[in-house]
Length: 303
Image (cartoon, rainbow, N blue to C red):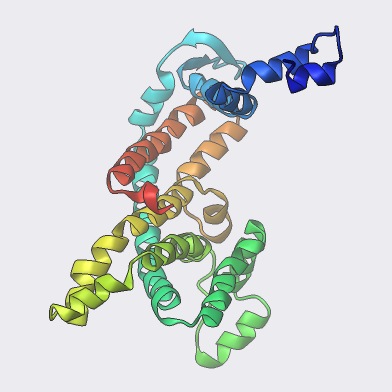
């Protein structure tokens, strides 16, 4: 009996190499998946992880004090001595951490009532409109939004005319609170969407059972809704915390404060790659610990 492959190949001929390889791979589903992912994962390993590894190696390489060139494989810890020896780097790190926490808490407080109304109260038509409204700021370019806030904070043009009758003056670009305001605005959608998804997954039967057992609205919120939606809060905080931790454009444009990203960017622009690479290990370490904690809290299931 001849197989369909033999019939297509014709009498007295053998299938080609590609056909034989396809026949051999057909029952090996796991191998097919690994071969399919080999290209993208290989590119990721070379282009992203490889470049990141080279960058981090710069932290342990010596910079020539005369020429300013980095000497590969000339191992030293001078960059780390500079970091630990200057108070300014610790101040910048603490400032950045505090700002990341403030932005995360602010977005969580603002996002929950919006997400709750979208998931539990709004009609399907209103819910769709609100989802579009939440996503719409993400369609605008990052720099456009930052420069729009820069114009508002400077009080130029229309904003100066609109605020002057109320005796309100624009704060200018010297306040560190500007970064908190603008970063909270930028990352708010990233907090709303995970909380909205988490609230939408809560079955109505649980809320009805809580009411049948005599629980009031406050008790239902504390003992049923909040514990179930807490992983979604943590999932949203991954975005707000990490994006604030690494942002350097917004602080540079709307305030006079330096964050970790600004120090890394400034030193890399000036050719001091060892110091920039050494300092970049700090946010990487912080986010690694943060992601491990978020994973234990079930945040990844809410993404």
